[in-house]
Image (cartoon, rainbow, N blue to C red; front, side, top):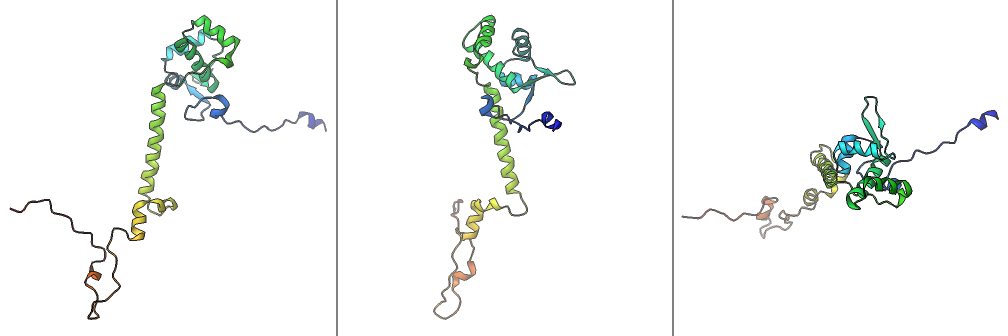
Length: 192
C-alpha cells in the first residue's frame, strides 16, 4: 500500500475550445509563433515585443530555436491589452493596473479582420477541395446520392418517357426509337 500514496489520478486532457478560453481562433492550436499572433491581434510583431516588456502577464516561451511561442492565454491577454489601449484609450500604466486588479472584467478585443477573412477563406477552400474530391471520385461515395445530376439520371427526368403502347398496326411506336433524345433547340442563326 505504499504505492497508493504515490499514485496519481489520471486526468483527461483538456482540449482548448472556444468555451474554455473564450477565443474563436479557427483552430485548436495550443501554441502560436509571433507572426501568427501579430496577424491575430492585428499589430506588428515589434509592438508585441514591446508589450512583453511592459506587461508582466505576457511571458511567451522560447522554442529550441529561440523563437517566441505564445500560448492561447497569452493571445487572450494580448487581445485584452489591445482592447484597453486601442478601444478604451488607457495609457500603458493604466492598462497594466487594470489587468493586475481585475483581469476577468476586461473585455477581449475581436481578432483582426484580416485574420478572420483568412480563416473564412481557408474554410471555403477546404469545402471546395472536399467538393472537388467528391466530383472526381472514381468509386461511388454514399453522399453522392444527394447529387442532383445523379437524381435526374435515376428518375429519368429531362428525357422523353418510353411509350409502352403499340401503333394501331401492332408495330412499335415511332417514339420508341428516340428514347433519350434531348428536345430540339431553337436555331439562333437567321435564314437569309
